[in-house]
Length: 195
Ligand SMILES: [Zn+2]
Image (cartoon, rainbow, N blue to C red; front, top):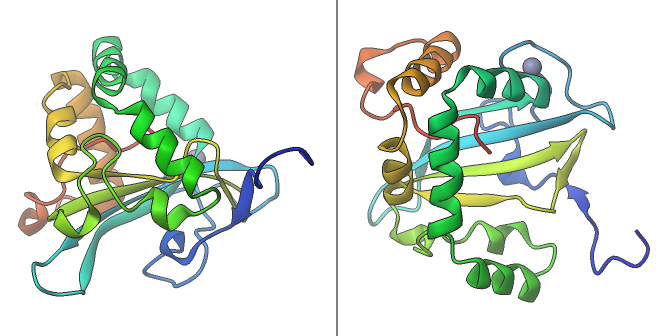
């Protein structure tokens, strides 16, 4: 650890606090497990909508989910979908660009989430995006996260998914956020749970 170029775990940046409470996420959205014990691993996902010409943005949804629940839900998704998503990242992610961004901005989560991981589109050019973070207790795990996916990449991923997987993700969405008809368009199946 002492030899690492920078800390693997850093204080949770404010952008990964809960927008609705203003503090750290402390419960798994699925099983209600307490998340802030030092060795508890979990993920945070936030979907955000931007408005052209305005600095204000809306949080469409946000949640934290423990690693056990992610694994359980992934098992319900089709093998085919999981493989397609993996292939999508392998073939579409510009690894060199990402490594360059990370290495020239060590330990800087704001820069790491300043553009789409797949397309490289800058966040201020995106209509909608999702943020992903891998966390442990009160800390952000900086090994592979945080990162951002823009609406274009999210749409492409969504089109890869099988009906079984879409049903599973829809179930997750309806269970946790309800099925409000007016939000139907903005709460798609999307890449929930697959970080
Ligand atoms: Zn859980």
